[in-house]
Image 1 (spheres, rainbow, N blue to C red):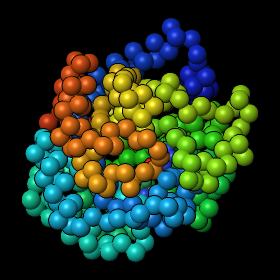
Image 2 (image 1 turned 90 degrees about the vertical axis):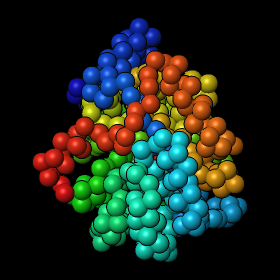
Image 3 (image 1 turned 90 degrees about the horizontal axis):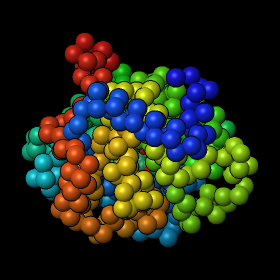
Amino acid sequence: MNRQEIISWLRQTEPAELKKLWDNADRVRRENVGQAVYLRGLIEFSNICGRKCLYCGINAANTKLQRYQMSKAEIIDCAQTARKLGYGTVVLQSGENRKMDIYFLAETIKEIKQTADLAVTLSVGEWDREVYQLWKQAGADRFLMRFETGDDDLYRRLHPDSKNGVAERFEKLRLLKELGYEVGSGVMIGLPGQSYESLADDLLKFKQIGLDMIGAGPYIKHHDTLLGKNLEKFLLDDKNQTPATEEMTYKVIALARLLCPQANIPATTALATLNPQQGREQGLCCGANIVMPNVTPTKYRTMYEIYPAKACIAESAETCNACMLKRIESIGRYIGSGRGESPGFLARAKMGVGL
Ligand code: SAH
């Protein structure tokens, strides 16, 4: 699929044509990663952040927010809950806190690996090679870091504290891959200032980087952020601005599946926020094969408000789990057991590439 074809799909509005896209992506998903849906237990262990990303509700400039950092014991507890619910992976996610004790995180990873048979995914932002290496040696398996948008001008406007623009983000992803992490990235869909062309280029970039995991969800306006307050200054004219809609999200999931057949692709919480009734199911039916139920203690959830009205915010881990099971079974799929690495990563690991 070339750039022009991707752009045409992104602009497609005919239901009959779109049906072909969903069916094609669903078939490619089935042929490459099968019928299993893997569950990743998400632990939002801290909302402390030093960055000023214009779209994000937990960015450093938001002084309205009460900040928290979970203790090691609390994090281990969440990992045990995930294990009990049968998950093969936990995702440790936080703001980007330069002052975080990197050894604290290393010790926590070690203890999770010692006490539970779980793959550990980190989603903690940009750090130096030595730090990524420390966490890898402690037992971390995977790393998620979206590049958010590959349009360097837009990237710099949205990340005023970035020195080298999106190139820096790409460099970090390359580094993580070299260190042997299974690597995930992705973008927000419908970011004010994002054109169809740039979103098509982002999709091509997924393939070029050779991502093992691709997370793409709609941008959701947060009223206490600079972007939320100044949307009009960023929006392109109607013809060029990508919409932050459910349908556009399905298109991106489907196209990502066609471009990267073996990747693990989640139906994201942001998508479920746009459509709480059917968002996850529909995402899973147009290319996705992963969901990330939240296992963060409910008392912390409301403080991890990267965007408002996040789906499932008040649910306990057990309730979240039961709800996911029902949804997955309702579309004739089943829960995957084990860690659920992407087949592409397993092949690379076997050959010792990037390890
Ligand atoms: N600090 C970590 C984790 C960030 S939160 C990191 O830098 O990687 C995880 C993701 O939430 C971000 O990568 C971003 O794509 C998404 N996000 C942030 N604000 C959002 C918003 N307003 N709407 C939708 N998604 C958002």
